[in-house]
Amino acid sequence: MMTEHEKLLAVQDYDYRDPELQGILARGRKLVTAINTATGTQRAAAIQAFFGRTGVRLTINGTFSALYGQHMTVGDDVFINGNCTFQDSNKITLGNRVIIAPDTKFYCGAHDLDATQRFGVRPDGSRYLVTYTKPITVGDDVWIVGNVTIIGGVHIGNNVVVGAGAVVTKDVPANTVVGGVPARVIKPLAPLA
Image (tube, rainbow, N blue to C red; front, side, top):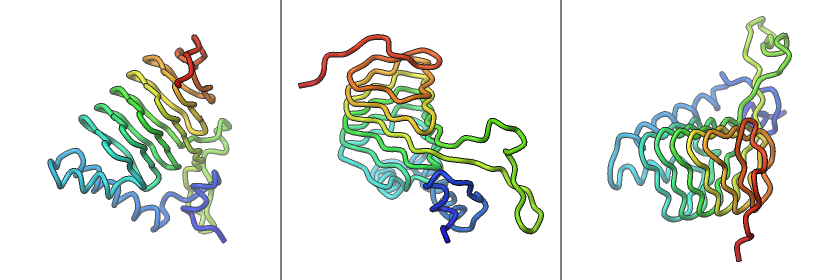
């Protein structure tokens, strides 16, 4: 039988009240507070403890928001600007040399389009919010310009620019500039050598 955490990662209905998940969330809240308030070696230690894996030279500039932390892996030379939100109820993977401008949001969680399916009933009769999660993957050499929203299940290829205010709901091919709501390819970029 799968744990609720395993169900979450497997894109299945899961119970967010599960003690294991609540423990991971409590740990995440504590570490995010430290990331946003501590300085120097205390802040660096909180960053290392929070993420599942970090490369070298990770910069978090300003206020940062995330849930679990251990679901996130970050490559080398990643820059996350202020007021970014990572709803990491599934895996979020950032490649190398990713730049994320302010006010960008990564949302792994979603609910059913059918309103009658958004709440479930446990064996004891209590109701719960049904949430499904999907991972988000961002390749290498990606610049995500400000106020972008990226939805769960999306893979962004290498050498991509996501224009300001875009809402990314589908995979983005490598070597492109995308923008709009929903995001679409605006123009190609020359492949990196």
